[in-house]
Image 1 (cartoon, rainbow, N blue to C red):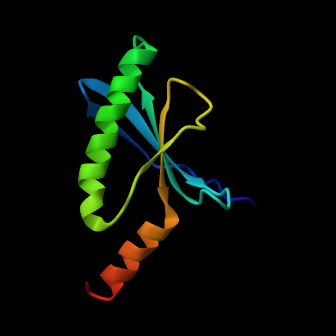
Image 2 (tube, rainbow, N blue to C red; image 1 turned 120 degrees about the vertical axis):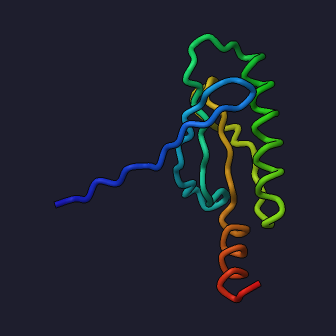
Length: 104
């Protein structure tokens, strides 16, 4: 019997807008890492508003993760223009975990 794997999802508010954040894996050999997809829960957003919110999300992610040596890249290959995507490369995540295991 095959196991069913569900993706973690959490709701967050950025710039007054609520998003569902879906986590996934990037398995492309040149883009391996964790994918974050910010899915707007409001249907009343236009592309300009979304672009502004993407900038705010980018700043928040960079501010929170950079102190841990984790970088965040905007994923421009998201299939839906209303979803804001990011990729956290595998190497910085591995480096973070290794450092913690070594007590650094």
